[in-house]
Image (cartoon, rainbow, N blue to C red):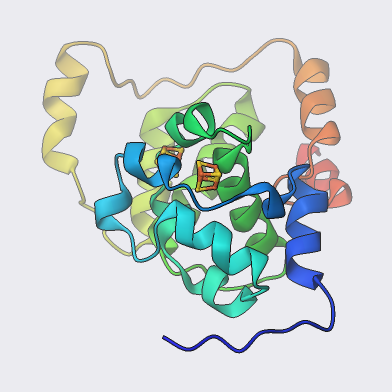
Length: 193
Ligand code: SF4
Ligand code: SF4
């Protein structure tokens, strides 16, 4: 594969550094992160290669990669990195970068899951699995996905139709106001009312 270097500015690498707090140029391609990554065999670019692509400012290729979306956030890579690069955080940073720049994710289901999970927590302070699953299925246009599992989960009390909400709404609002993970603050605030 040929890579056209963009030496004009370290733009993308710089953005990832400032968002994540880690200098991607510290990576010397030892491969320890990839060697321990449980999903590396299922991804298109290994964590090591993704770091290299960022170093080379290959923004398009990085943002097209499924790797940050298949990442299980297990932190193995971060724990193994001899340069103390938090590779897990880099993966998260790529997802946030794509989201904020309205770039279509290569694995839409993962993005949808993040959205419905946070929506559920945002609206009640606690995860409402039934509502979240329904929301996820409807958004993916697979209304009955995993529906066969519901009876068994209901039986052992792992699923409920009754929604529980936190009593401390102010604390919940404070947490979401401090976070701009998915949406600008004003958008989050609007949803509170
Ligand atoms: S955090 Fe993600 S990239 Fe790192 S080892 Fe786990 S699955 Fe792989
Ligand atoms: S373990 Fe650290 S230094 Fe080694 S390839 Fe991964 S990110 Fe780079």
